[in-house]
Every structure is written in structure tokens, then in C-alpha cells.
Length: 167
Image (cartoon, rainbow, N blue to C red; front, side):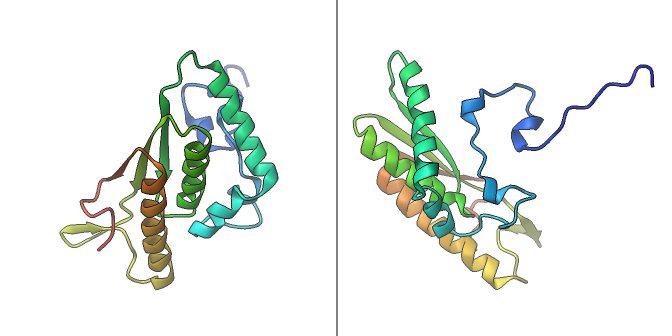
């Protein structure tokens, strides 16, 4: 019909941004796509094992070196990482890689946790109906904080909940 516009295909979270990102700044983990076979990245170990895969590690290093070479004076890195799921393992391995390869540069890491549910007057992170998910989230958060703080110059946890979602 006249006046209709073709809507662009939305496949990734970055497609919702108003500013287009450079193609080398987004890395799609195929096995964890929303329509993938494997499901969600829910455990710290799953995230860590992603960067133990030589193909994934090499791709990450190539993309990192692409941006580092563009810098006139590299001062450091900022790493934003979800702590409550398997991306805490990814963030831990990324900060370890940065720490090993760029030991003289600063690494500022931000550990992010969402507020997932509200109960009574207080907000809390874990659903009382699902103890396995609560356990995964607690372990991911604890391991993420330990590993990110070990390899970062400064680690700063961020949450809208006063307790990082841990009750």
C-alpha cells in the first residue's frame, strides 16, 4: 500500500538502538541466540568455557586488537558484565585476558545485577519458587565478583536493589 514503510528486521538487542554499532563491536554467540538450540547462558562455567574455545577466543582477540590499534593513547578498559547469569563467566575470562595482555593498563569493571521481582515492601532478586535458579544466580554473582575483582584495577557492583539482589 501507498505510504507504508518497510520495517527493518529485528534480530539482536543492538537492532533496537538508535545509533548503529560498528560490526566489529557486536559478537553473536550462535549457540545462545534466542532461537538457538542450547537455551540460555545460565551458569558461570558455561560463560568461562565459551572463551576456552579457540575459535571464540581468537575472534575476541582479533576484535579487541582492531580497536586497540585505533587508539592514539590507550589508557585502559571498561568492562560491563551481568553478574547473575553465565555472562559473569564471560566477563571473568575477558578481564583475565585483558589483565594478562595489557597488564600496565587500567581495567574498570562494572558488575550489574537486575531487580527481577518485588515482594512486599522490599525488592529482591531471587524467585522463592525456583531454588535451582536462585542457587545459580547466587553462585554466578559470588564467582563473578571474586574473579572480576581479582583481574580489575577497580570493581564496582551496580544494582537498583540495595543488596545486589542477594537476600
